[in-house]
Image (cartoon, rainbow over all chains, first blue to last red; front, side, top):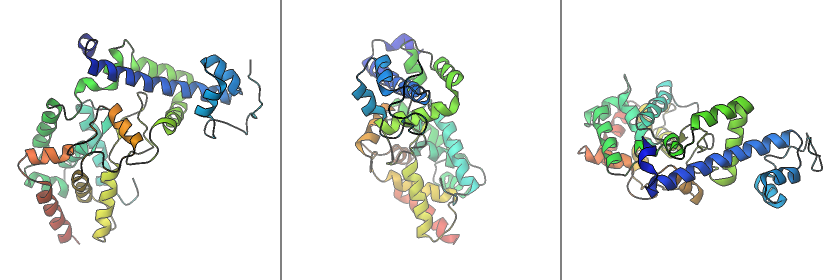
Length: 79
Length: 227
């Protein structure tokens, strides 16, 4: 019902995009967390996300998603 | 919510959730709690509201009016319909994520995504981050905190629905957004909520021909009588 009327209405269109961005944020965090748990390095993660290593590190490192116990900072990606 | 809240007071949140669901809102706010309080059977708070002309029907009509006036988000402003307007089936995404990673991983990732970007503390409970993949955001922290304070003032150990009602009323005395950081304000915007203006609870109560102060006085009189 919303779809039929929304595409031309900026109020709906902009809110839809903001919601999509929220969805992407969570999906990205989920994938990064999974990759870290599987021993991927920040560098490898950054490559697959097509962003700089600094960007991904700045965004996700800092304790929350890093798992020093499982794989060290210099751990290698699984593949 | 701490242990001081009685069973009845806790159940208010479930009823509030139902009210948010009825309006297809992605959050649970004090305005939903107010309706929840009025719907509870065997509760003094409900009786007090009813005596002030604020029964469930009047309150619901009031909220529907605020939706129609654009003060509260309309039913089409919910995350599933917004994403559907882009051709995205939120239910399908949710299912795929849960199948691959499980519910716990999803909750953790949601929390991480939000610790990073939006909310950590403020009056929004960090246990329920705002995201298309999480449940409704709880925007009732301040009202519940004020409910606890009300019980303290009266030297009453338990927090009952009457205290919750007082918390909701006192919260409504301030404009929306009181005490919020810029992050939390962004979260409100994300939910389609306004950043300023009188609280919806105040508007609904005044539309029913009474005032916050009058209802507060009723509740306080009742609470003093029970000490």
